[in-house]
Length: 344
Image (cartoon, rainbow, N blue to C red):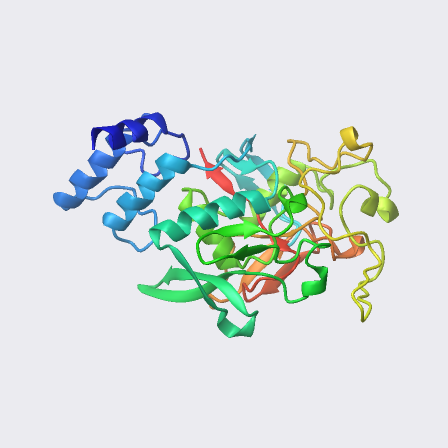
């Protein structure tokens, strides 16, 4: 037992303030002891990691998992400030600092999550829900006091002959672990992930999905531009972002007229002799590569979710921050991915 506790002490990581019970800016063995003590004495504490409005042994297990494994994600600090909301044209104030992922979450990072989450029974492999595919990674989404089974991620590829050529469903399962069919796509953004699968990844590591206002703030600071960068002619924006250089047109044989789908995250930069598409704050791919799930919801229907930023299969004309916020039911698609936020 003492060696297990010692191991936990070694792997102490700093995430957000949640579950930092003793306020030392990290989660460690002391926080685990304090959470257990709170449960035993029926005291309130801010460590509801699985979002069921209860503090129980499930939260303790996830806290231990968080401390032991963590997740190697590079963040960019975004200071508080004003934004011009492109949907309303109103000036809004974000009165807090936050940290946002410099890049979209990659296949490699999602693979790590899958193999960690299945060991603690957070997820399982089963038939896809709502006929979105054949086999899926499923899990529970907690809403209004109920656990609702949702499909998080589509396994394999419905277009098998494209498996080795495109970043569509390249993660699969062999009854003991998840693995990637083509390691060339390890650093590409994960796609075929639902809103629920993105949200569970974030919660598993004590993070969250960004709000639309945070995407806007991270994209362009106080600017009113429709793009995260300036100085590139509108009709050549596709040269700076991984976007479709034509109207959406899928040939019957799927021999796409635009390169090979996704690119590695952060691929558009001067080191690759390309236009650097990082925002003023240094955040990459806020437009293009993968559509990104966001945290915003509508009050009248919890099933409605949103993506923003445009993906590799979106024409540049429709991918501006102002225009590309898309309504969806949260299901996976071959161009939907996500990034995460850490609260300061």
